[in-house]
Image (cartoon, rainbow, N blue to C red):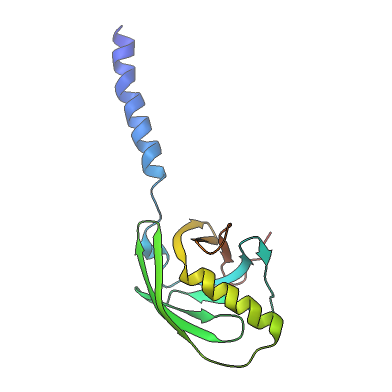
Length: 142
């Protein structure tokens, strides 16, 4: 029976370690990062012009919506992401680019949470069934 009593603390320690691995990424990994949009939910995106998302400093976002530049505020609490107070330039765009930009901005402003998977950023949005998928600049989407 002594073997079993020594086994319980080891199992509890292993369970605690496993649970700690499931914690959301710290916000410090997001601030200062730059991303290129690869997919709008289940739809691929136009790569010319490139849609981007940057987190230049804590509390701020910026990027290219596909045609226009945008900016706004962002807050991160654990894995929760909230994007608000967005604004953008008002350049005229060709219809496919304009349609993509409208879908992108709608999904971005409905962001709920995020995941960092190496060089991939997923943003889950209430406006899409599947998350927005981003990669770091220079990384090819596979």
